[in-house]
Every structure is written in C-alpha cells, then in structure tokens.
Image 1 (cartoon, rainbow, N blue to C red):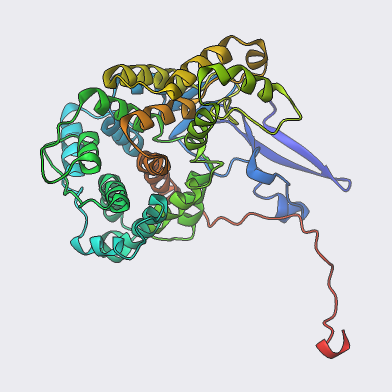
Image 2 (cartoon, rainbow, N blue to C red):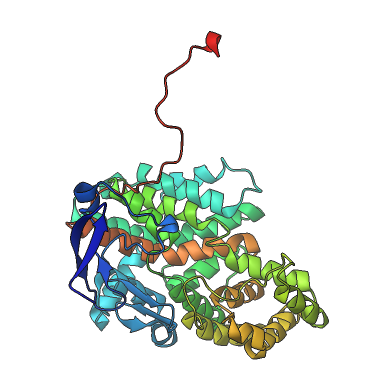
Length: 427
C-alpha cells in the first residue's frame, strides 16, 4: 500500500498518511479530514474505523488468530494462568517468578470489599438480576475508595486497577449469594484467585468447601479466554467513558452495562437456551433443517462469530475444557448430549462448513458453566469478572496515550433543515 492515500472531494485533492501497525491492516489517518475538507466519514458500528492505537490484543478473524501481547490465546490457556495473563495485559510482558508472586499477593490482599458496601445489596430486590447489582455496586466503588480515583496519578491508577481485578470476584459472588438468600462469605487468602471465587459462590459458613481442581482449572481457562478481545463494544464503552476523565470505577461500570446486552455478553446464555429448546438428540435434525431455511427465523446460537471468519481460536480450548468438566462431574443431562451431537453435525455438514459456522467459545462455555452449577443469570456476570482485566488494561493504556482525546463520534444528519418556531396558538 502507498505511504499516502488520496481523496478527491468536489474537485479538490487531499492526501493523508497511511499508518502501519505491527500486525493487521494498514490504516488511513484521517484526523484532519474534517478540518481540511469539511466532510466526515460514514461508518455505522465503526466496523472499518480504528478508534485508538493499542498494543494489547490482536485479532485476525480470517485466520482465526487471537494474540495477547503477541502470545497466542491457546498457548496462554493451556500453559498459563489467569493471574499471569492479567499481569501480562497490564504490564506488557510475562512476569518473572518474583514478579508473579508479588502481583498475586497484591491482588489477594485487595479481595475484601468495604464492610459498608454490603449494605448496598440490601437495597436490591431479591430477584434482581445479578448484572443489575454488578452495575450498581461497581459504580459505587468510587464512593468508598477515594484514594484511587485521581487518574492523573500513575500510582492511584495502579491501585485502582488492582482493586478492580481483586474485588470483582467478591462482588460477583455476593451478587449470586444475595439472589439465592444465602449469607456472604469473606474471601480466603489461602486459596487461588479462581478457587477463592468458587468458594465464595458455592460455599456456606456451616461447612468447609473443597475446591475441585478440575473445576478450578476449567474456570481459570474460561477467565483467560474472556480476558480481552480487542475493541469490542464494552471495551470501546470503557475507553469512551474514560476519555472524558471519568474515574476508573465508573468506566468499568459502563463496560458492565454494555456487556449486559444480549448481542454482546449474553451469547452463551442464548446458546444454552437453544440447547434446551432442542431438548433431545433426536430433535436435532429438525432444528438443523430450520437453521438452513431462509424463511425460518430460527438460528443456531453459539455458531459462527462476527469477527472470526474461521474457527474461533478460543473454542478448541473450551471444547477440551467442556469434555474434562463433564467427565469429572459425571453429569447425565440430555442437554449435554444435544450439545455433543449438534457440534459433531455442524463440523461435518457441508452447509455449516461452507458458511464457516463453526462452534464458537459461547457454545461451549454455557455448557460448562451450567454443568458446574451456575444459573444462566450468572453467565454474563462471569464474563464481566474475566473481562475486567482487559477493561482495566485498556483503560490504563488509553489514559497513558498522549494522543488520546475525548471521544466525539460524528453523524450523518437527516432531520429537518432550519425552520422558524411557530407559537402554539398558531399551529
């Protein structure tokens, strides 16, 4: 590609530089286009617009590639841990043994929440959706932690980042406990990040809770696979909120609100609902035919991806994890039989192969979480818990970028032209 791109607008020619990243397509720098030519570009959904410069995550949807700081997601999920991936996203490099132990200890010491924060939960109805609770409680954190809201202070940004990552499992577990009428459990510093979350979620004060290592590893992988995913809707929301100078807790709350949308964070819940609708393996053929029928509104959820035009690189690891969890728990449920057979058919059917409708990460994650015992209302909460690491890293990167300015998308206005006001008595 040329070093510059040329535009001809109303007979006038304008040239703009073409920028190259370390991976991915080149981008045309059109920041001066409006000032030079008095025109905007039109890109609904920002599908062809780079809104920022980032060194965190790279996706090649055509090739099915997902990298965090250059490391393939499958290698991280198979060999690393969620805490190590969190360190990587925040700091740019994998930690040494001492660095990792120090980071893990720091996160562990931040897992408790302010005691008064518990009273917030009592203000919600018992049947409140856990995501509604998460939005409210996370947004309220800035009312409890005044010493880490100055975004101009790098040290306060670091403290806020550690607090968000550490407290999110506690907040999520408390949201679950509140919804089922069980007492909150304080964090246990002797457990891992994931083990502690499982205990706070499923444990009770009346007896000891033993963390199942297979389930612990499965949840750790799920968190890794959801840690960051480039400039998706919720991450862009966090960045846009942060561009105004909002405190980090408010920015993460905005991301949670965006993630709650069914088109974003609710995909695994939708996939599980679909499996329940199919019901039994003998009904799969009927639903496959419906999915192929253009006149039928039914769609197979958990297949294909708007970014990946090939196999979702996270799905292979999630598939292996699902098999391990189902075997460990010995779950006997026709829904899981439906999932296995539907997956096999989709991988062999020419219709799905031609359209590249492979099972994605959401297809498997819903099956795993259901088998472990999470209700579907908690699925997006777990997504938010894991994605907090990515949101915090993206927010930090944005704040540190000298070229960052407040977000201000433009529009193609199609309303009435200027007209005079008519008094109400004359209309």
